[in-house]
Length: 162
Image 1: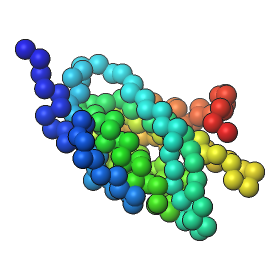
Image 2: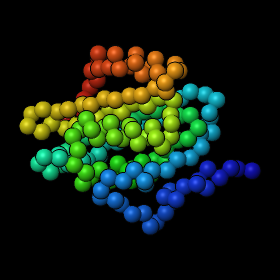
Image 3: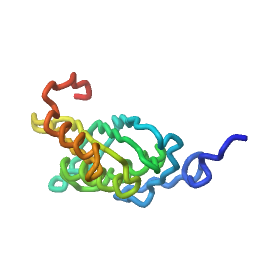
């Protein structure tokens, strides 16, 4: 007999989804990780992230890379999409937006490890690529976060979104 993985999800498959145009972490939903006995990465590539400059109200565009090692709960992808969409009219600096997303996902899932890297398109000839990460305190994931932070961007990758 197959298990119902979607019993706690209200957005997946719904035809009546509401898109919030203002920051709304309440739209996030989780489901149970069925492989809690193993470490593995889940990576979301989000090439259509938009937010507003808090000073000029001009749109800022980015690709976000969200990678995490789940523990008990995992974020549902449609809910994540709607959550990221809610930044569309939110005025926030690039660095703050990326850290807000990480904080909300930590509060939601309590992952073993998470990192978020924003690749914002240039404006005025400058692009900004904020990176933040977190590893659960007192565990190997805390050491992993420290190592990844200390070695972050030592070998820059090919940038193809700008």
